[in-house]
Length: 244
Image (cartoon, rainbow, N blue to C red; front, side, top):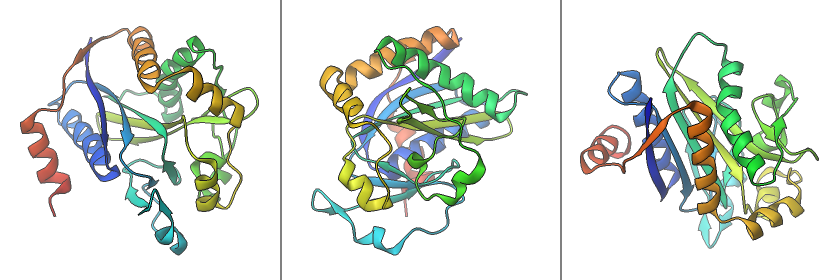
């Protein structure tokens, strides 16, 4: 099977969520093949889960790099995620009759295999539904999240299911600022700083993306066809999700 691979895009949270939502809607209509992409955020952003209707008022007063934090809603579930110095992956694929957790963990296998080849061992978290009382996605690790042997959460994922399609995307801690995280969530940063230093010192984002791309090809048994978002596609995305 051929999937589409969209080259990395650095853009605002609003644009990134619009792209994911458009790809999902096109696949849901049968107009688009499965897709893999990796992306980064052009400014520090908090993405809120689909069911998070409110956020603390003080979040609107926090600045980073002399700019206020952006806030954007995801169409997927889960809690708030800080996107600053992280790498995000996105998979849009066909839905089958497996349970939600099975699909989560199947998709996560390409992440586990890719990071293992970089020397980072990952396994699933163990937190139960009590996570819904924590505003921060990264301060709990459910069975859909990936943690290192010392308990540091490296990858947090969220999912959206349609009638025939599934969108799963997630944030991978790479060079996220510890003090900014703790200012936002009023909790200790849930990752090992030595791990963060190891990642940022030994591996570039380009290397990590290339390794994870190869892992996806092997795990899903697919060929990836690289294709940037076309001018017509951008027009559709803007018209449906971005034009006010």
